[in-house]
Amino acid sequence: MENKIQARNLNLYYGEKHALKDVNLDIKENKITAFIGPSGCGKSTFLKTLNRMNDYVDNVKIDGTVTLDDENIYDSRVDTTLLRKKVGMVFQQPNPFPMSIYDNVAYGPRIHGIKNKKELDRIVEDSLKAAALYDEVSDRLHSSALGLSGGQQQRLCIARALAVEPEVILLDEPTSALDPISTLKIEELLSKLKEKYTIAIVTHNMQQASRIADYTAFFLVGEMVEYGKTEDVFGMPKDKRTEDYITGRFG
Amino acid sequence: MLRSQFDQELNRMHVDLDRMCHLVVCAIENCVTAFKEQDYELAKDIIRGDKQINDVERSIEAECLSLILKQQPVASDLRDVSTALKVVTDLERIGDQSADIAELILEMQEVDSFLMIGHIQEMAKVATKMVKESLDAFHHHDLKHALKVKDMDQEMDRLFEKVRADIVQMIKESKDKGDLTINFLMIGKYFERIGDHVVNICEWIEFNQTGKLNNQRLI
Image (cartoon, rainbow over all chains, first blue to last red; front, top):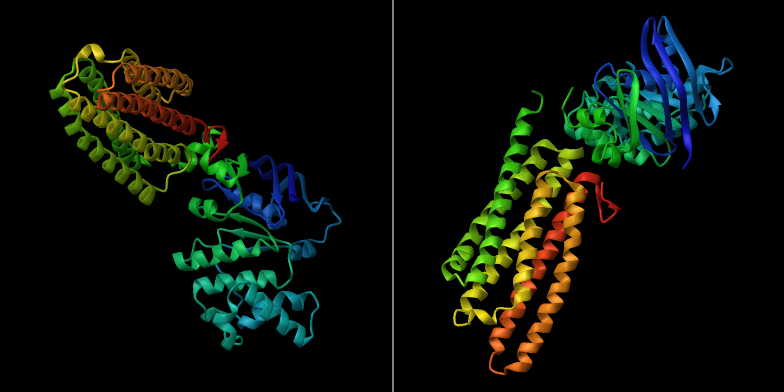
């Protein structure tokens, strides 16, 4: 099984704060990898290093390497726009643009130069179908995306991420603002999407990690404490800190 | 405390499990005494006591299912709950077999004690030791001890072979004791089965500590 992404000796500092400490982690192709850990443990920071979202943070310093298909994404020659096309991201709060459903999905492809209407129609339809949203919105593609429910908005954001044909999808607590049914829909969707994409997800919901992730990594105060198959991490954790966290002995 | 409710429920399950272990040990110890001393009142007590064992088993099962439902245990908690769910089945069977032996003892009220087969008494002794020690290992999460107890089953199997040979001899020597010989054979077989249940318990102790059952990874 191939490693799509490899982080090696990754250190990240926010000013004086050492937020990621020597993280070594592989993200396997066409699998779902979940990052768990208490607030402030570095899991979201780590997720953001995978498509250089931390570049926008002032005073950030990053050491070590992150490779995508064996190429270091922190190499100075890397075009971050292209990188983020390959490595898409979905956030905690659904954040559709204040425009139509169609335009939300077509936004990325248009930026990347696609103008042909037929092609855009096809991309919008395919992306909405892949995000399991098409049937619910096919009759109102030109209505405002802001009229959708929270769960639908989040699936729209996934469709928007899929529209630029990424290889990796990063999700930062994508269901924490959603009700249980919408959450299950997203989980089902992710389990399907992994056939075509590599997925990394930050979640506070440990049941969610155990339900959908193939691999799980546990972070604590900037350190990646344990990484392994999800069954092993939740069934027979090797590190006592992992055991204590997942069994609720500390929070 | 973060998980005080969870710990309370888990603790209740462990207390009931200890109680069930105690009842089962009493049943088998009484069984051995009733057999050796032909104490028929004690045999009746064992049969009556079996219901109590079954009742505790049901309570523990309900507690385990409630823990799974409400707490979704993981890691050592999950292994504790699943071990309890599996072990109670074997404990309950040991209780049943003690009651079965007690019933056979009652059927044999006319038998002279000199006819009692020595090897069955040895089986009874080993069975009691196995039950007691396995439950001790279970209580203390002592994998090494559990594996040692598991090995004792070989002695049990050897003794059962001897009991069989004794019974074949009895059949040859006297033609009019058909019922008796069958009862002896059944008692021997029940003790032998108790040994097998102890082996299962020891294997679940192994799972509890390692996540593996007979070297096969379960979680």
